Amino acid sequence: MFTNIVRISLVFTAVWVSCFAEAQPCNSPEIRIAKEGSGESTKVSSDCDNDKQSTTNITVVVKNQENPQKQNTDARQNQDKENIKVQHRLAHLTAWLVIVGLIQAGILALTVCAIVGQIKAAKDSERAWILVNRVGSPNKWYDQDTAIYPSAIFEFKISGKTPAKIMDASLILRPVPVKHGISPAEPDLPPTFAYERQVKRNQEIPELGRVLAPEVIFQAQIILENVFLSEHEWFDLRDGKTIMCAYGFIVYRDAFKREKETRVCYVYNFSNGGVIKSIDGTVLNPPGFRIGGPTGYNHAT
Image (cartoon, rainbow, N blue to C red; front, side, top):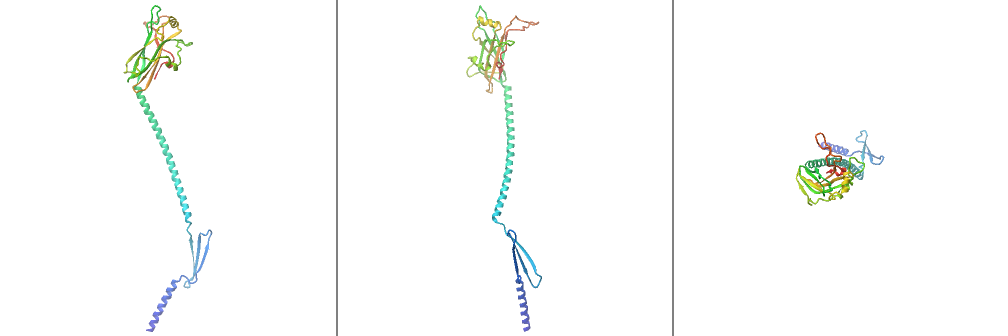
């Protein structure tokens, strides 16, 4: 029995010694710490002799964490770089949008111009024109035995598909000196800018205007400026020193309320040297009015 107790005591002693030996990491530890370079890492070496086995060297490298402020700074810099890249992309996109907008604006402007041109062309095709149809002249300009009050008649026609509203008409009939050095003879009329200052408003036209339908023909009679010709004025006309001129203008509005103007100038031709006829009896030099005067005096808008 005693032997059994001794045996049990030895077993417990052996187990206790074994557990104690495993609990100790090493009997004679040796620790070495070394700093490298910038001091950011540390090396720890430990040598341990366990249960008469060969010594094993273990090297552990531990890196210290970087400075948190530096990490935040790097993060902010990276974020700023990303923001700059995004802003550059947005700038490029905006530039392209501007270019596309300008192109669209140009196309829109061209479209508007084309539409305006089409509208104007449509209006012009439908608008009214007041043009001279013919000009009448008196049978005689002068008679030394009988008082004659010569006059001329302008016959106008409303051309086009819409009516016209006559706002003003100023016409005059008078002898004008001949311009020297020009053949055939042309009247020496003042420049166009002085045109309006030599004529008088037609009192027969109401101030609010006179509306005439398309294809209507109307007449405007012109009395000689000095009522009748004197003997001296007649001799100048006969000898070609002066030319009898009928000229003036008409201002009107078309159906689209656009103001237009027709300017006219006619000169009278005498049958100097007698009447000349063709074989079939047609008079080749009939007396009467023909278009004459400066270019600016015969113009229609």
